[in-house]
Length: 500
Image 1 (cartoon, rainbow, N blue to C red):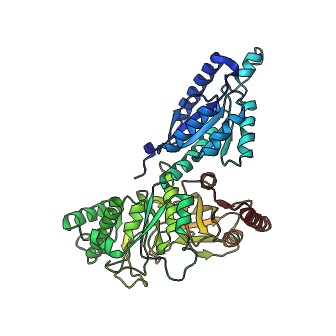
Image 2: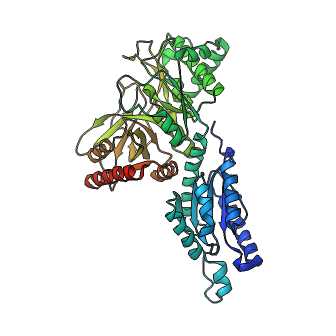
Image 3: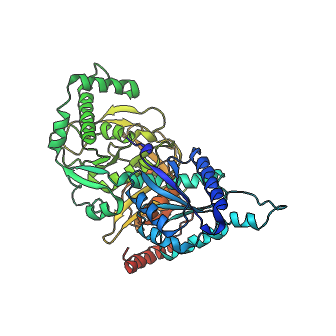
């Protein structure tokens, strides 16, 4: 349900007529070779389409209008092969509503020291042209990512690829819908927000539905479909004995399977990419959905518990960015701490809904009582998260703007077994350490819910935040609380001053 083939990137090169047709033909040929090489890179997930060399403002404006109107165009890669007078880019950049990356490179990696002459200089002056273009982009306050280096370097392709993934997520959100079953959990502040402004900034259309709409879909499915899905569970997971065929809780597994079938049907029919539920609104359901949102998330959908539609959107965006990468991405919550000063950890989990894409090994399908919700015992997948560098991210509504917070963490194997904890979980060491990371997250107003990803890095989130135009606070090994407090004060002043 995530299709990179639905989007592409345009490779656009700037030059001018001053150098004559022969040089322009060379510019076009060099552009095609660079775009072809980038297309072949495993680090860039979207196809790159070469567009004609731009030499005047009318052509640039026409190209921008074409890009704006093309739903497949997720963004543009701009490169100035020769000197390209930047005034001709003003109209186009002012009209452009797609993200762009400024690639600062040149076709030939090495200078031909023994033979270099002015003809070579004129045909290879990206150092000149890209600075001219960069000036006008900065004067126009144009948001973009700048990547400098030889186009054949892996590092350059990786940085373009990170931006391409962010652009793809933004393009995906432009027509995306989120379904809310029930409202936000009572009296919780951070899960509230302005859905109209959120749609304007992030693109997601957030719509509300009653549980009866979902129940109607659940009731469409009978024994054949339910038994087939239960058999899939049997083949995919380590099953608790009571849930296996003939087990005394097999009916609960059937009920969970019916919920999954109904949820998938509802989401597919309505073309939704994410959803929320809440344990305070379960009328018509036999149990709080557990294994259903876990498995549906694993297929690329976003999810937020307790009505948290902003986190559901963030999970979807990060699922799209991470498509094809190893590591997994999940809805998460900072649940509890191990505060030993010689080794402190955060234990992330939720009541039920953690995505198995982050699991270490095969998840175990279990059933246990749940003390809230007032329904029958729910079925869920239980596992530990696989270790490795990860990132946690949240989006909050500050009233006058949205803020993203991203924290670097290192997921570790739990220091000891947790045989009595019947939920999926991830144990991590935050950077720079748990006390400072927690202080920083709280000072930034980050949510208790987050999106937890071992597939993505902070660079992906930086690119995403830049494209949509929201503030990003990063918590990492360099975080200093005094510096962060000043950053937050300066950001608050600048956003109020600029009206952003």
